[in-house]
Amino acid sequence: MSDRTILVWFRNDLRIHDNEILLEAVRKADKVLPVYCFDPYYFQHTETGASKTGNFRARFLLEAVADLRKNLQGFNAELIIRIGNPAEVIPQLAEEYHVNEVYHHREVAYEETRISEEVEAALWKMRLNLKHFIGHTMYHKEDLPFPIKDIPDSFAVFKKKVERDSNVRQCVPTPDHITVPEIADAGELPTLQQLGLNEPVDDMRATEYFQGGETAALVQLHKCFANIDQVTKQKNARNGVDCSSKLSPWISIGCISPRQVYWEIQKYGNNGNLLKLELLWRDYFRFMFKKHGQKFIKAKDAVQDLAPDADLLLQKWKNGETGVPLIDAAMHELNATGFISNQNRQIVAGYLVNTLKADWTQGAAYFEEKLIDYSPASNWGNWAFIAGVNDAKESKYTIATRLPKELEAKTDFVNTWQPSSIDEAGDLVRA
Image (cartoon, rainbow, N blue to C red):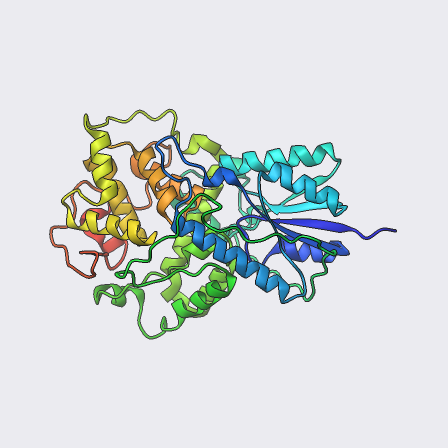
């Protein structure tokens, strides 16, 4: 009998630890073929001329794929890297290496699911199965207290029922070995230039450098909890200390799983509650996209009362030229680093929608380009909430039109004011 080979198609799950598809493939197959495909679709230019993926995020992704390859090589395995349409690349590799089945983690946003469907259709013609796994949420879909179609649209109700009636699964074990076929051409990691992008320039004002990859993710995981017993997040915020975990870039492409973060939080009691809440919001947005699809954000159907000069105001917002110190500082930081705090994201989005009366979908698209930690469900879900175009009962941080009266100059970006907690944000939050 010939060896059984399973192709593991890595997408937004660039890790060895707590990776169910990798572990399952090792258990079910004689040989595993790890593959990552750089899809040109994600590096094209949009109708406005902007890059769909900005260079900060692209660099972070390249670093993460390189780290995944290095970690697999630690198991005497190899990662095949290709540039091309996955619907062409995956079937070609499946035929070349006599693959019996393909594993991947299921996505929920329409672009990602469309690509999966194209790959699945191409494999089906070869009589090969694309097996779907769920690995991007803290709570597993099968452990929710309701089917997807009955998930409450209200986050408050969702949170209450899930926390009361569901449990977070333990992380799956790390494989003790990974056996791969003999690989003739593993492929080279592309350069940013090959992806159509320029090398990003690291701003001297930036206080953090985000290094892509599971190795850096695990370092950051331990770093963000190192002092949690000594100083609570609330006290840090009052003293002007940045208390963000900054784990979102690694979570967004799966260098670390939400479950890994959750179980680390459990060691620190109530001090990790805010981070746990953020993870639950990520889950909620993904489940809302699974339940409603594109209807959740109603981007095509929403009717906005736009300002007459909305396009000009949008450009000023992008450039950080609104004249409002907090808004401009946050946008300067976003443009210079690819990252701003979660609170500041809510603030600048609310200002664009409620004060400038500009097109919220253009704001969401700009975040998609710029953010290192862009995740389709979280980004578009957040923007749709702020714009008020879905049926949910309350927003994550519904931004009022009035900004704080007193702004403090905290950094060289002019200002990175942050409330000490969500509830203490005052004028920025509606209960």
